[in-house]
Every structure is written in structure tokens, then in C-alpha cells.
Length: 187
Image (cartoon, rainbow, N blue to C red):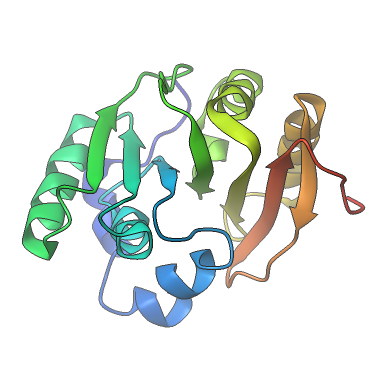
């Protein structure tokens, strides 16, 4: 397993000021809508899972995937407290195996791809899990991942069959929206 952010460290960036920098509804609404089946890969404490649940609403589903049981336990409590536990479905995975068994309209990998040891497998599994024309938003932290490393991650994604749809501006991040099965804009 690569370096994985400890569950307790997630409190440093899941704090009351975060919506100023990363508002889930504002960031994700261009790609996610009511009734969609979506995944938050490396969901941590569920910051984006909660935002996704508010977008997809009761007819949608959020698969919140993490490698750490402690993260998922904290997420469950937050989902219960927010009244979103019927929409959010925590899912424990293993390094190198997301084990996604349902087709997704959208997947989010926010500040986590750099923590995986087998990026080829992760991107391949995400490509397989997405419905035709499904989208994947990848972000990596500018302060932790070099531009070269992000470009290498992007090349892996393109090699498994993704195409570039958009390059949104997300504060403190490299970001790209990838689509399964459509024309690409330039890398």
C-alpha cells in the first residue's frame, strides 16, 4: 500500500472553512444531477459524499469508498446526522481493488490517486465501472503532487480509455474531468 492519509489527519482539511475553498455542490453540479449513481473514491470522512448526496437526492445513490474502516465509521455518523444515510452507502475496499459492482454515472477521486500503489488497476476499474459516457473527476493537491506526477496519472487514465472532457479550476488542485467514450480536448 502507498502512503495513505491517516483517518485522524482528515480532520485538518475537513473543517468549517473548507466550503470557502471547496464547495461540493458548486464544484460537482456541472457533472452530477438528481437521480445519478455516483462514487466518492477515497471518501475519507465524507465531505464530498455528503455534498454528492445533496445533489443526487433520494432517487440517487452515493457509493462512498475508502480503504480505512475508521473513515467509513465517521462517515456513517455524519450521514446519519445529516439525514443522508439512505443515499450514502459506505464501502470498504482494499488497496488495488475498488470492488465496484454497480454501474456509475460519475466518480470523484479527490486528492487520493497519488496514495494508490497500482494506478493502472484503479483507472482500469473506474473505466469499467462507469456507464458509457460516464465521467470521472480527478483532483490532486498542488502542495503534495508535482505537475509531472499529475501528468503521469493523466497518461495512465488516457491509456485505459478515458478522454479529457474538461479542466476545471479547483483551488489548490490540479484537476481534470475524464469521460468514458467521447472525444478529447487537448492534454
